[in-house]
Amino acid sequence: MPWSSLSIQFCLELAFGVLFAMAFVPRAPVGLLFYRLMGTSALALVLFGVGVPLATGTLVWSDPVVLCSALPILGYPFFSGPVRGRRWALALGAGLVGSAAAVGLMVGRAHEVQNALGTAIATLSALATGAVAGSVGLAMVLGHWYLTVPNLQVHHLRRLNRVSVITMLASFVLVGVSCLVFSEALNAVEHPLFGVTGLFYLGTRIVVGLFFPLAFAWMTAGSLKFENTRSATGILYASTVLVLIGTAASVTLQDSYGVPL
Image (cartoon, rainbow, N blue to C red):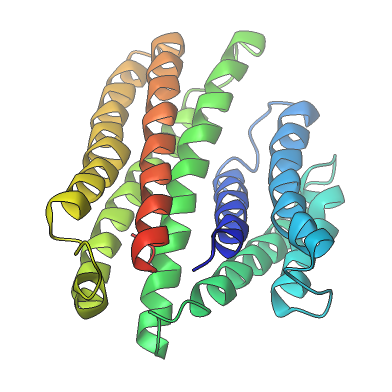
């Protein structure tokens, strides 16, 4: 997969992850700025992901990826603004569906993904990677909000931390399933995935991007048990860095093997 296509997918993955995480803080009394900041982050990722390729001719306006990406763009004024309740949920849901569909379309264009089962697994793996980055990153930002809203209930951050754990476990399982489903393609290259070089990047992806953040999530849960949000936020900051390293390793693996891992 050319880097230009991979960069589109990467931006859309992260946008999906941010929107996914926002779905788990619908009623947190954090003020408009929090939702505007997170919503704008997702919007910027979508605009960058499809805007640059449109400007360079990599994508055209009629491309299904562009059309799907229009959903989070159109929903932005609602899920990032003062709107709450059903309209907020519908706008966020539309953004999630659009970004997820766009990721799936990009994944399906890789020649290594040749059937419906492979496309489904590869898409889920890519979305799980985005969900991990989005949930951990948004949890870290939410943790900082406790400095400005001291009476904010801890259960909001606790819920998001649990969501991040679920996404990490799902990502770990999907990486394993992808290795099984695409084993032939992963070994039919100059440097097979289960060779020295491939295992180095795969190990970095799993250990740094998933295992360590899981351990940090456990530490975060321990801090939140005592309502120590400052310690939890510091741990989440470190976890965000690790998750981004793991995501970078995932991008490197996909660039080499054509399959989201």
